[in-house]
Length: 95
Image 1 (cartoon, one colour):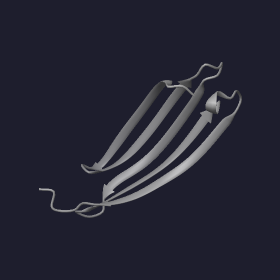
Image 2: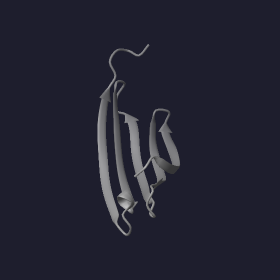
Image 3: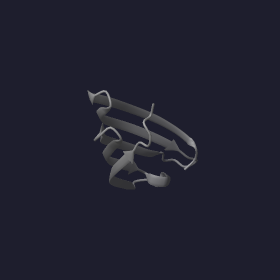
């Protein structure tokens, strides 16, 4: 596919604490090529970010993605589901 694309993304956050939140994201990307078909990707995800302690932060995300006409191939579809888990540790005091 070429580099011509249009993207629409909507994102929302619900804060439980100033540093702990739920994130919801919906996005649609249309990619155009020289052929007659455009590739359309729809993606939805939900994630959680929060501090487990003063220095340890946890993140988790689950996502669903659907691609119509991948690579510009008419009538084809592809679907993916993914999840991500991350832990991070803050070195030093951050002051």
